[in-house]
Image (tube, rainbow, N blue to C red; front, side, top):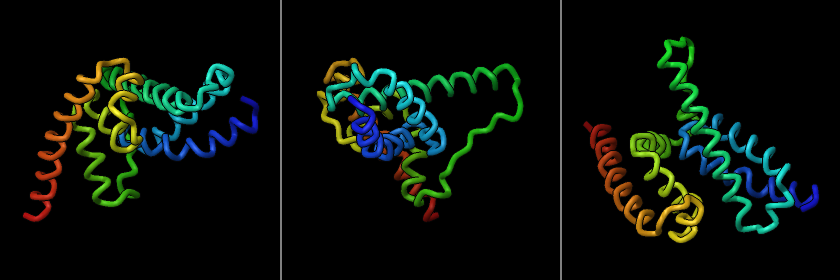
Length: 164
C-alpha cells in the first residue's frame, strides 16, 4: 500500500473507527488518541495490511488494546494513591440518548461491550467478530444475548428514572 492508498483508507476509516471506540471506551478524546496511535502503528505495517477487510479490524483491535492499557495504567495509578487523574468525558457533546447508551455500555462487562459495539455499530457479522476477537461464534452469540438483556435493563432504568 503506497502513501496515497493509506491516506484514502485513513480518511474513510478514521471517523468510523473513532465512533466504534468511543462507544467501547466511553470517551471520544480517548478514542481519538487511541485510533490515531493505531494508525501510526498501521503505517509501519502497511505492507502486511494489504487485505482491505482486515485493515479496519487490525486498527480497531490495536486501538482498543491501547485504550485498555491506558485504563490499566490509570487504575494502577489511582490504586497507588495518585491524585489529579480524572476521566474526561464528552457526554455533553452527545445527544441524551447516546449519552445514556454510552453510560449503559460502561456498566456491562468488557466482553459484552466489545461484541455489542462490533455487531451493532461496526456492522460486523457473528463470524467476523469471532475471528477478530479470537473466540467461538457461540461465545459471541451468548455475549450478545447477555448484553442485550443487561442493556435493556439499564436503559429501561434510565428512562424510568428520568420520568419520575
